[in-house]
Picture 1 (cartoon, rainbow over the protein chains, first blue to last red):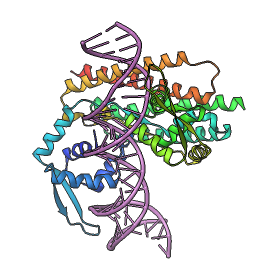
Picture 2 (cartoon, protein in one colour; picture 1 turned 180 degrees about the vertical axis):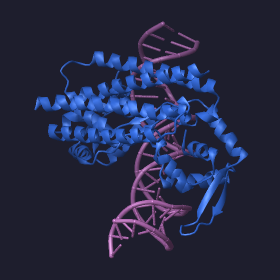
Picture 3 (cartoon, rainbow over the protein chains, first blue to last red; picture 1 turned 90 degrees about the vertical axis):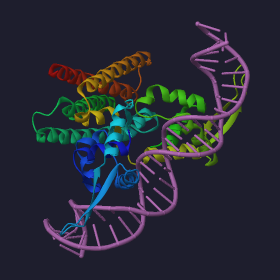
Picture 4 (cartoon, chains in turn brown, red, cyan, blue; picture 1 turned 45 degrees about the vertical axis):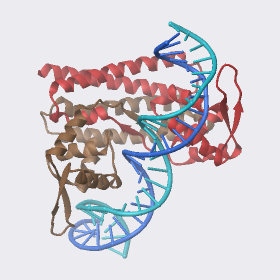
Length: 173
Length: 173
DNA sequence: GACTACATGTAAAAAGTTACATGATTTG
DNA sequence: CAAATCATGTAACTTTTTACATGTAGTC
């Protein structure tokens, strides 16, 4: 799974511009996939030369023009090929946990600050997820709601464990 | 946080070879950081030319010789600089969840297979984590145990949510 | 007047993956 | 005798990040 696959997937339902793709990636998808403009625009250009998408320039008033891309048949086939390829395993990379792992080389006050910060970020993330869940239209298929549910559950588990760790750390000192 | 930082951290406690570093990355660290030999060996070479580590060849009997690297003062300073740099946010990338997000373009039987597979993998991972937790010496600082605890909690939350989703998906059909 | 949103791109550099290449020893 | 473990490395490639570059329109 890479940017190509995800972008093709996002163009499946309707044509979009690079800027709109970035916005789609912001919300529900951002929990398990991310891409910057520096990835999106070159990827769109590459997909176009490969014949998987076609560009149409849309002139807008009061706003810059935008390039709207839509899937070709070849693009649809390419996306299906991705769906039929083996599922890759998840990647979880955490600077915070690496630092905890090397905690012995850092003073305990800083460690506690890191945990507090992580709790704050985690609670903030939880709020965002709940907000999104509330805005979701009812009657969505379980596969679609899973993405947010799993996000919410992972977030809750993480927050709980961090709070427990903070308690242990502050008890010690 | 990158391979350089993690390798310097692993060499902090004792000198190690590239092969031994790979083994360290296998166990507790692999949940939140990963690197292949194709990353480790070039990184070690780079760290050496930068003067952060020094190599010593150890001749072994019955086994290939190995290059054991140890931290220099500059290396220790470099690692401290990493610890003092801002904490980067976690990266979670999931091919499985991307597929669920695009579930509408795939038949439900395949979706169910994906979920079942993910549950199997998740349960397998949980077993490994519990095994590691049992083997951990007692009296470790909370920061160190957090790494496995958070892994266990995230794993449990994920497994639970997946099982619920599977139930919903199979109820429908 | 500063900032945010809209909008698209490029170029250089860093980082990482994959496959290849080699070879000894031990275990089943 | 096949496979796994120990052990190190290279080369080509892919991917991604970061910073730069540009410009309009609306809001505070």
